[in-house]
Image (cartoon, rainbow, N blue to C red):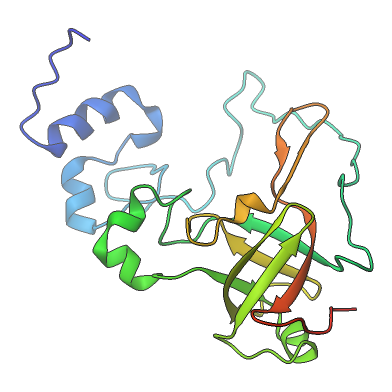
Length: 205
């Protein structure tokens, strides 16, 4: 683009970036390399970063944030007798988004090498499943097969599937229904059914 992007290393690129970003004030490249990581914003070069970004005020003329009430709209598809669970999708710590880059990293892929569905222990016991069992997740749009993982953070009646695995593409299952305001597909909520791979099992109540 005609710019002089002739950097000797990441330190020079970071220094230029920090000069243009107020959020990186007091966080030099030398400090990042010395401390390994620094949470922004930081009030001084010798003070730790703040855990809360806007602890005193917001970056507005009044210093106040603007709160706007919103009417909650029900999901386009809710659980029923045929598809009694809720499927939600998202990212993993090790794999960003679709995994196009992170799954090419040998280290990251060795940490999370295969597709899993996270499920609450109550649902797993009711369905006769153990950690590592192969399951089939079905919605009105298709099915995928992957291993089940016990996860106490997942509420009963819900399962979480990362969408970074091409061998178990979670977004084949999600609902393409658009949000009426934001026009965003409803990827985070749809009705689903869980079966043991190779044969049906009793659906969750």
